[in-house]
Image (cartoon, rainbow, N blue to C red):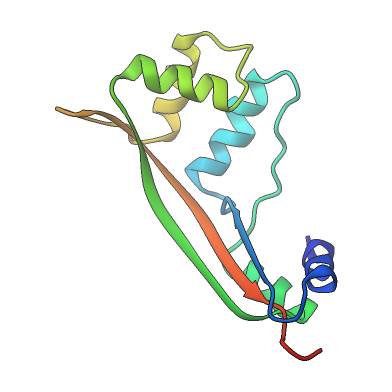
Length: 136
């Protein structure tokens, strides 16, 4: 992944920004992606996820500066459970799974919330931004 940030620094104009997001290792999202998504897709999923601080380390090593990195929790909201299941099956390409298998996989990895307004799937990603120095 270091080479990606090296290339960003090379191609950005001075003062240019790069923004990025990824999944943290050893989280429910990572386990879901490398578990059921890997199992139920045609192509598999073998994500190499990041640790806290990786973005900062890679950006600084490549010469990028003003790095900010934050982990954000959010929820995806749906009107009902069938809508959630269809969305996740399609988004992740889980063509080998039926809806019952998608529901089981989601419930095993996430604390899905139901309320009077629908159903919510918790999600978490780490986001970052870095800048190429104005003078190189």
